[in-house]
Image (cartoon, rainbow, N blue to C red):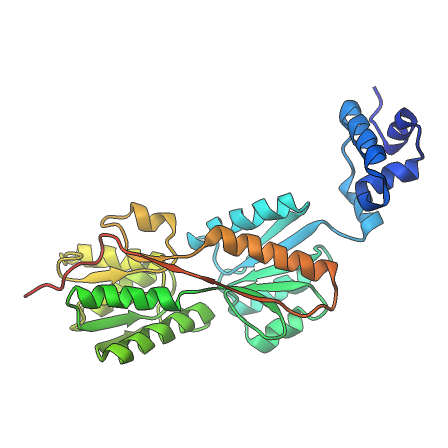
Length: 329
């Protein structure tokens, strides 16, 4: 049997091949009864529309780019899945690129993707604002967890949840805290540090700042060792992966958690719930972040030159077993 084409569907339905093409590519131009007849015939014949041919008609690649700074960080696979699911529902595929924490690579990848995708999502970018603006010039682009006035953005605002975390620790009797800062090029790290400083000033408690540390398990081990050089009884880690490194370092040195130190992470990745003790953290609305980023990008693609959109979604404090009353010793 020959492979079904729009011509075989047209013969089956008694319409022109152009009408069949419009039914797939510009369905709003075909009456509902005719469109349904064409779709039914396509299903019966086993017809699969060619994405390349559809691209010639629509001028779309039906592909979006997604650049992440470090695919090994457990925050990003959850985000990638949320973005991919939403993109598929909207008729697009996702081309994933790992920038390996390199600002230069990030900008280079945007340039490389430009001719291959309809638009790009850059998650937690490390590049400068000027470099991002230049790289995305004329390309539909959404930044995740990095606001920039000229480009659309979707961010998780953890300020309120981090205040809740601070109050949780304060009620447990902690008065001396450590801020284990994340990567210096990360907007999210700067934003989280700023929120914790504001809370500490408002409460009048002691806050020692350590780092910056890389957002890796090894970076967390280094942060844990630095924490033990302070009098802080509670610590805010940049993210859950860093916090898990802190827990490992403290355990390796015989320091109990939460008995002698309390530790708070951020993002609520799967690791936070499976580590022992389970990690007190801030839950990011991962599905909503991914879905919203794709929806905003789609609107940018469909309305070239439109005004940038800026969306903020709140994080939620999630107390677990890595925090508890301050030790009396």
